[in-house]
Image (cartoon, rainbow, N blue to C red; front, side, top):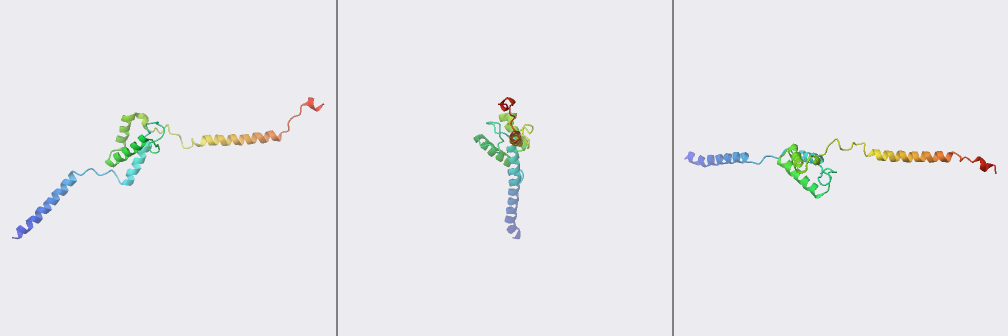
Length: 147
């Protein structure tokens, strides 16, 4: 009689174990990394791809409709576990190599300061030139002094 009482428990335990094994076997792949790591990856990829409407700004800061769609796609693909190379290759296939940000064409960090530096130097030179002109007395022509 004791065997009969244990049989339903053993069958239930086996069914649970089989169910767990099958759920692990057919479970979707886990997202790559934690949400914070995923956000870092998404931002890095968005910074590496130019908006194809003007090829002037990265997708991360451009505000066109296509840039917003690309940001959503990138986040989705990262959550699905696609690699950075796969995502970038997808955009190269769609829009050509021009869509990638080339670090050689990005302006250096000192580049924005050049126009301001030139403007400040021009103003300083202008003030120096005006002071110099005011400090010198105007020469009086000799023919005018004789009269």
